[in-house]
Image 1 (spheres, rainbow, N blue to C red):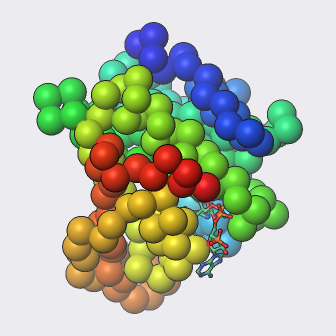
Image 2 (cartoon, rainbow, N blue to C red):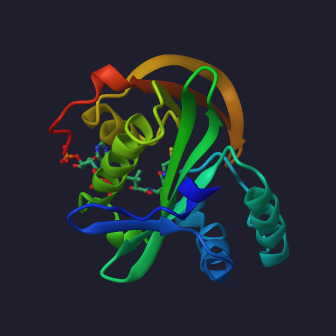
Length: 181
Ligand SMILES: CC(C)(COP(=O)(O)OP(=O)(O)OC[C@H]1O[C@@H](n2cnc3c(N)ncnc32)[C@H](O)[C@@H]1OP(=O)(O)O)[C@@H](O)C(=O)NCCC(=O)NCCS
């Protein structure tokens, strides 16, 4: 899994392979109600669960998880998942786990760097994602990058006592704007 060792650089963000030593920080993020409000997953994870997940991930070849670093600080993760070499497609997901780093342009930059890698070195043609319908900041970010809404999974997630629609979006390689900033 040579590709999984890659480091990707933007102006302000650096994407490097997630490491076992990062998992304690991830557990903190995925236990923070302010963060998980925006994620499909609902319940806090334990370190043991996260370590099990990481162990499985390391044995598979169809996922690449990056730690997002800004100024040497690990602030979130970005994953390119379910990389399908036959149909040249993949899923993408991003979490900035430190709310103080939200809305500073960093998520857009991290996504742009990862999309260039996906459409470039990985040779992917289509990258898809799913987002909770009320996550307006994320949807705006994805639209800014050129993603289009493909459809809605109606009431697909039970969140904070109610059913929530999940929006599916995708971007094709030829649709990636050169200046997606
Ligand atoms: C979603 C996320 C990755 C976006 O990254 P970010 O660094 O916060 O976003 P950016 O600053 O790059 O861009 C945010 C854009 O949304 C806009 N925005 C901010 N809050 C908004 C809101 N409530 N409604 C609509 N747009 C909003 C910003 O103005 C900016 O757009 P602009 O550049 O046109 O002004 C990040 O906020 C995050 O990780 N959030 C928590 C977890 C999450 O939601 N993950 C995605 C799950 S699908």
